[in-house]
Image (cartoon, rainbow, N blue to C red; front, side, top):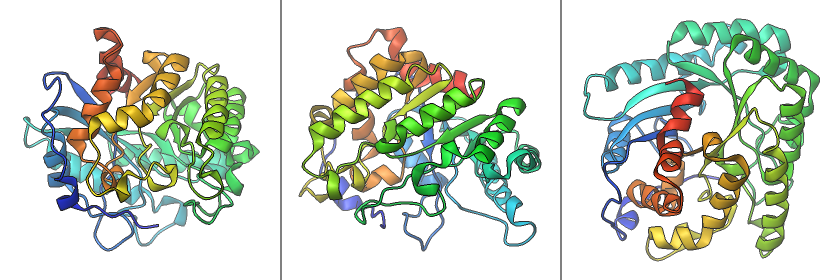
Amino acid sequence: MAIVVRENWLSTTAEEIIDPMRRVIDPHQHFFVPDQPFPYYDLDDLWRDTTGHGVEKTVFLQCWQGYRTDGPEELRSVGETEWVDRIASAARADVSKAHVCGIVSAAELRLGARVRDVIEAHAAASKLFKGIRQMAPWDAAAEVMSMDGVEEGTLYLNPKFQEGVRVLQDMDFVYETWLYHPHIKHLTALARAVPGARIILDHMGSPLGVGPYAGRREEVFRDWARDMAELATCPNVTVKLGGLLMPWQGFGFEGSNEAPTSDQIVAAQSRYYDHVIGAFGTKRCMFESNFPVEKNAISYDVLWNAFKKIAARYSDDEQDDLFYGTAEAFYRL
């Protein structure tokens, strides 16, 4: 499923920046090269998007870009770390704009103990390396974007995979992942099996809303909320708040005549954020843009206005956790 960014459509909704002096880290952004299912996105694009809200730092998340084209297969992903390290170096030339301060890379954790060599190569490639994301978004429905080779979403239960996560734990790097809501329970099992691992879940566990999940939003919310509350009992798990505007979440804003307002996002989605923050606490939650993927449905300025409206019910210290402090502490930026 291709993600399409329509700048003219996004410009149909413009808002004044809320709380422009608040310090912000965006802990989840990508860069994409041209000619692929995701929209081209480079440092200049990131800077254009992040200027309004004064984002100070970002964390790059692996997205299969810049891989080496030769050498051992398991080490080819190190090319992405090298590529982003060069972008981060260029970003440091302008102190007034957002700096890429962390890189979360890719590796095959089912290598078990042998993945240590891959992780060491990533760490040698950049001082900004923070950990590994190996994710498992999968569903049997054709309407849902699914990844191959993730054992139908049960990747987290694989003993060799758990061994690989233990290597990350021993090396004091982060394990990051993304999944769909029916598989939250499998991540809970992993967190309990490797209680010393620093685990972070992207996109709030992605409650689905298309295919067989369409028209069942309340039922899905109940199932998702129950499983997220159970995951919250694992003190080694942190959650990124965002990612609900991808097409398979089924909110459908990308199909509207005009781009959504922040008030529309708050009305449709605030209960998801409130549930996660209530379960995990602000010290284990951080807002994320997931740009440019979310840009299929909303502009950066409007998205972060929505986040600021959702966060307004919390104290100033708690808001600082959500927008800056938790990300800074978790990734050691």
